[in-house]
Length: 315
Image 1 (cartoon, rainbow, N blue to C red):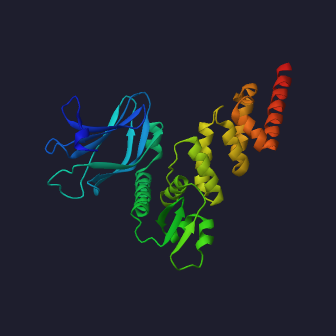
Image 2 (cartoon, helix red, strand yellow):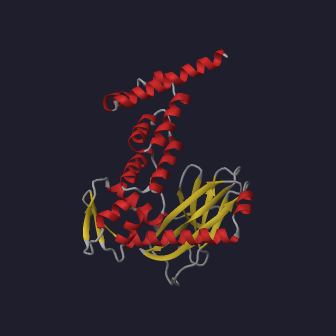
Image 3 (cartoon, rainbow, N blue to C red):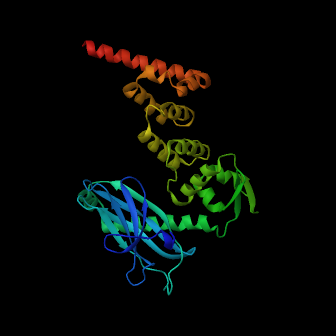
């Protein structure tokens, strides 16, 4: 965020805004006394019909120096269009920076606020906040690469990491670095973007994928390195995102590494897919060429399901 990017809102305040999605926008509102210092952060939404729980952590950097941190655990009730959070700076700024950078993670959960209030006690809220802080701190450890003792080489890049964390999170990594006290280089044959998402999860428990294609690649890597939490999260994401267009891609990966996901897609194809249309797609033709037995299994399953439905209709 540069000074030149600022705009004025209807109240005459200087703001920076970032559209997160068609529904959600984050806005940085500047101080009245220091027009270029961010005073508070607001999260806005378009629709006000539903209730949400918003969680996460945001970090504000000024001229590449960390100047503020804000943890989020707030409810957004029906009829309310925004939440606002004041910032407390880690040091006194006599002069506002030329450039700001806002980094972090925000999770937006659709929920019933009354249920959340009944279910989440103060102790639960404190525990959740502590876990957010722990996750965030480990994420910074990965970013600043402090005290790293192993290098991971992948696709022409080298990422410094920490043996203790890798070993604790993945039995495959533990085997790779067992009994080796010297600094070493671990070479990996996965895409660099997949490695970064995988490391983000290993250090913080967060999910860094946003598309079906990314989730499929990460799922294969999670299975290979026995990151079972990440594997489960990928499967859940793919189940939510499955469609006629991507069903064969998801089915193929499920067939290779996730039987439960494969079964879910099979059920989807039986219930919601026009099979004659699917057979004309390039993905199906590719499946017949590369996984003939799987395509035959799909065809058999769909035909059997239709026969059962026809028998049920007769009765």
